Image 1 (cartoon, helix red, strand yellow):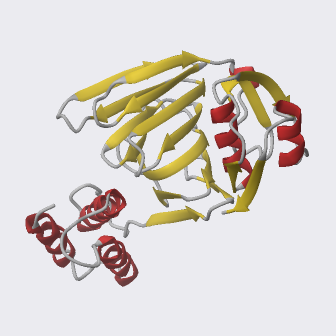
Image 2 (image 1 turned 180 degrees about the horizontal axis):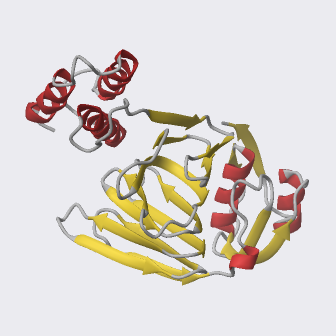
Length: 282
């Protein structure tokens, strides 16, 4: 990223009105400069996400995107590794944020859309409002929501975005690194996994009745999943790393449901009794 981008963010900050709420102005400064790299001008993707959010906050405060006399406030919710955070938005939408994720949202919605920002993973139940679509920005890519329950994975270090639609309607809009715009609409019971680089995607079906979001902690439903993915989900659910000491068939598929309360050892003993492994805390 060249110096002109950094200069543009600096200029946006300096142009904030002197009448701006000092607390809001301080928030903009904190977000902008926290996102700058420690040395040189080599940006990590997460740094770009921080700068992008900072630019939107600054522009909204300056009045170019948000027209109301009261100062605009963008709240920040962070979930540490291994925990789940919950927030109820101003429109009564419910957001569950997974560990290692960040969510930015306004204290109040205004204008013709409800815009929020995500870096990580959420499960959401969004209030229906046809006149004001709910839009999640994920480092320049978006998910448009129309009164819906869904799971969304959008980690900045991953090349993929994954959406599992439980109810309602959503549309993904991906601006690929190749300069193309890729749009896909989903129906309930569809899961899409999209490459942010190429826009290529895979679409599979699942039964919403058996979909268990991560917010239902330690409840696991495996619907014809390979052992490799099951291990990954168990690692996420228990907040650990599973180090294999044997060589199981990772492509072997399982149907299983664990309603909660089972230990990691009990689950693995049921699925793969001959598996040798050790566990390390994250």
